Length: 267
Length: 272
View 1 (cartoon, chains in turn yellow, blue):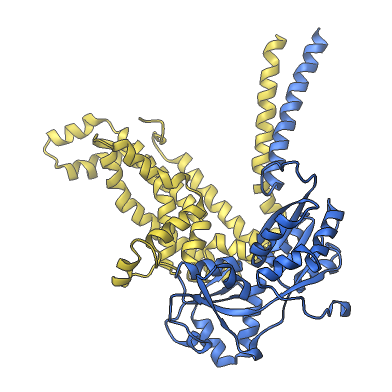
View 2 (cartoon, chains in turn blue, orange; view 1 turned 120 degrees about the vertical axis):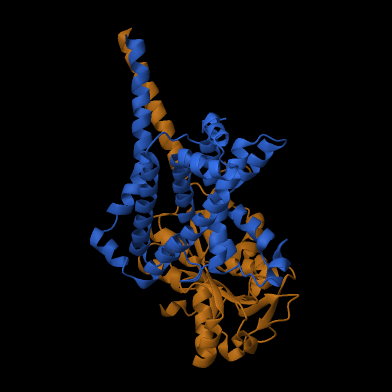
């Protein structure tokens, strides 16, 4: 009897500590400064510029990630070929890259002196220190979150559904669009929400690749860093907005209707 | 028997709790995260301006009193961390205003000036787009400067103000990034992301030839003085004192000179 009771207590204590440790800093963002002052700080044009830029760049980045990532993930989920797992690992790699490494990598690839720097210059495509560069950075760090989830979601679609569609005369494009995507939609939506949350929070790669200029490349996390030194309540106010946005996205993942196959569970 | 079991149970739970707290505390405060080797018994924690990275790195090797752990960054960010309760032993800033502000709040001891620097226009060594200050006004020239709150950014704005409103507006129009510290400006330059930036002379020297310095007109050159202070409630006060005196006359002074820093300007700190 006694032997049975000590372990649940340890478990409970661990949970209580973990909760306190994880929740306290988040709660402190909202309680450190009077709410009225926080809301007042959001009227600051520089803060609204940063939030608007974050929303715009992350939306464009996510649109690109969905447009390219969905069919790419479909191939990886439905075809087996030599080196498939190596390709999947490559797709997932940015997931675990430190942000500073992501920034250096983007500069080395797409910067003025990077591998494709000359080609971009010839094509008159400017990324570094431009809003387009922010989009690239956000897409780079966000895409693996979406694609990983999309591969898992497509992998969980019952192949007999696709086969049935094909037997009934659907082209592969039609069975992808009318069967696979609708069936996998909850998983795709969950992946999109996670990718979006990661993109909204991006800091290091953005600063290194795109710089920090109000209205052009200064996203909300960069604006928070900028304000920390001079205007702590303003930094808290922007932080609070990001917490709410991120929590909303996480909640969306949890509330997505239907059965969501989380990446890693399948295959 | 039952009491022993019960004690064991609580000891286990308490031990776990302590372990979690210890892990949490370490994660929150340790900067380097590594346990120091015991060659030097004490560890001195120093918050220092990003522009001191090279010189202070050398000084850490020459400083015999204690091991030195640095946190380099924008002086304004470091000052804000101290204002929010972080307690390094020494704060070394790229201006005198930030340490004086903390001194006025009782957060640090009276600051001492320990070095001076010059502002320059830094350009990539192999690029020819910017050859003089006039070129900064040309449309299409990309410039990186410091954000307004970091010392390099406020010195830069002082320079621009002295160049006259027309020049100032034309240069500011070409600013493509406002970096949180001077290392960010240097990075944008060495990566070729911008054509020019306002940095300290020592930053150009530290790139070992990657960047070239274009001097500013004498009339536009601001006074750039570095000041350091011991943080109130520092854990290692004797070592902190030794660190500061070594900066004024000792190995630190030598390392600063080797990195291109100038002697501190005539002290006007007595006027404060």
